[in-house]
Image (cartoon, rainbow, N blue to C red; front, side, top):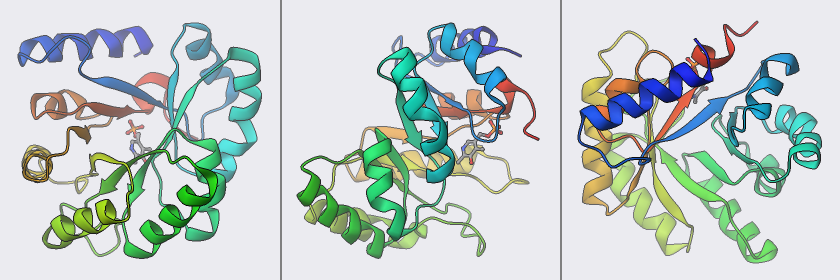
Length: 215
Ligand SMILES: *Cc1c(COP(=O)(O)O)cnc(C)c1O
């Protein structure tokens, strides 16, 4: 697989499901990938990437921004409150807003810094004990609380349980977004991004299918 294979498949799935052209953004998930795999994707002109950890992103993206110009980098992994300031300075979006304490930290920092990345509320659609994300039953009230804090919540994000059919999880997330008036849906990874597009994904997060297996 390669970047162009994936963009072709995204375009095909977008069309097949009657979605508007360019309604799905590809986040190339570069976490844990060696630089010599990421550079060709930058040289090919791709400008939207995903990372899981603040420190790892801080180690590479400032240099690449200096070299390539403006780049959108989204945080996909869990965020500790004590790293929230660094995250707000590095990322254009955070997909892992998953608890009240983090919402309060982000709101306080947004006041102080005068800006805030786009936010996605992560929902633990499978209610897995080990997984991050707000539980589905708590999502509506959490979204309302985030809005009351003036946080720019753009949409919802989920990571379905590995052994489940992802379709019902994507469908549940889409319904939750619709009833809360949210437009963006961050869902779908290397193995299931076409299913996610069928269910309304606006942001697919594809790593290994573009860059190869992580070491
Ligand atoms: C690693 C990761 C991805 C990309 O996974 P692939 O299977 O390599 O496409 C997407 N989303 C999140 C939250 C991740 O942690």
